[in-house]
Amino acid sequence: MSDTASTRATRHTPDRRPLATAPDLLSSLAALLTAWVPRQRWFAGKGRMVTGFSLLSATELLPCTTDGSAPGLLHLLVRAQQSAPPSRTPVGDDCYQLLLGVHPAPPPQLAPAVIGRPGGGPLSGRAVYDALLDNRLCGLLLERLRVPGRLGALRFCREPDAVIPSGLPARPIAVEQSNSSIVYGDSFILKVFRRIEPGINPDLELPRALADAKCARVPAPAAWCETATAGEGGEATTLGVLQPFLPGSADGWQLALNALAVRADFTGSARALGHATAEVHTALAQTLPTTELRRPQLEAIAARMNERLAATARAVPVLQPYRARLRTAFDALAALGRDGRSWAAQRIHGDLHLGQTLRSADEGRWSLIDFEGEPARPLAERRRLQPAVRDVAAMLRSFDYAARSGPAGADPWALEWARRTRDAYCLGYAEAGGLDPRSVPELMRAYETDKAVYEVLYEARHRPDWLAVPMAAIRRLAAGGEPALRTDGSGASRSAGSDGRG
Picture 1 (spheres, one colour):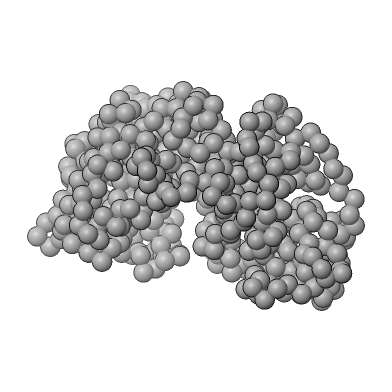
Picture 2 (tube, one colour; picture 1 turned 180 degrees about the horizontal axis):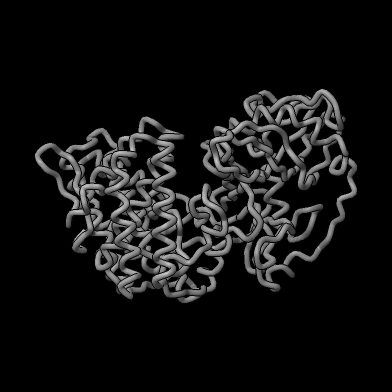
């Protein structure tokens, strides 16, 4: 973060409340957290036993009193200590951000949010619950963000020209993802990162850079919360980002499913979305550093793809029969580097799919959101300079997902819909960005294969009923990458991209 940004939060409020420094605070919560944290959707350590927690920081955002009249709000950064099976490569322990409400008798509507009651320590006997499900405490977070300053380990920052009204009603989004979100009125949405890594989060860094570039395709951050724990480069660690909410907009995933449900054409929307993607890539390349990927970098990328393929095949045996044929896509990428080819690399979205896009109801204008990247990957990897075609390949996978996820399944019409939609998206991207992504088929095939492998692992772990969707792509890509996505008599999908047409 720049010095200018850092100086926006200069008001210091010392945290002298005893609760935040009580030596038995974490030990009194440990049993409750050990049972609750692993059950949460945002917990990244699935399959590994939690053996304990270590406390990195504790801050009272609202005093946790004992009189029973009002809730308290406690902010914790904790590191989950986990065991790894002997057969696995040791992995580090993850840090999590917890916002805990504290109340002797929370109202009945908060019963689903209750984590438990500590049997001792400074919170003994009081109910501890997930504060991000409490409208009142969520409203307090907005008030903290309205006024830049420090409180304990936390620092609240706001863009100088941001207008954030007071008293906006808070509405937590009930669906849990890898983070938690709160909508304020129809004006703002706050994303609270759950799994924390040192350094600035791309979901703050990239939208701010795009705002500086005057790119209107991405909502510009209005405020954010951070802690002084620095990552590489000395940047503060991002904890949450407040951005404008886009009321009335529909996400691209639902729009695509709606079109498929009524067998409607989606090529016009896909072409416009290609325009939007190219505009964002162009603005990022103009504002942030770029580089050229040559033989060493291309060989390293191919090696990492092969490593992910090998690890996924071990974890998901159904992938094993396709491993040798899938490797050819990554080996072809490495061979290009040995032939002297090179490609530009820049900052990209990193997890682009239809669910990360919004289309306005009035103008039909596309926006891109959620620049965090794939949360399961390390922050340093998500901030790495990469070919823009990686985002394009991910979006092409999303069109294929939509076509195979509806009632039609492998219906030839739905697969043809996907082929035409993919082509339209690439055409729109070429019109706005100057480079047709289909003109680099080796990159396209490698990145689409890598994405499909990622999807296989994700679905096997989280949504086994969906595993058939990426496995259909695996079979298609392992077949050798035919020129266009089309169907044969059995309705099976064949691959795209080897000659650049789709």
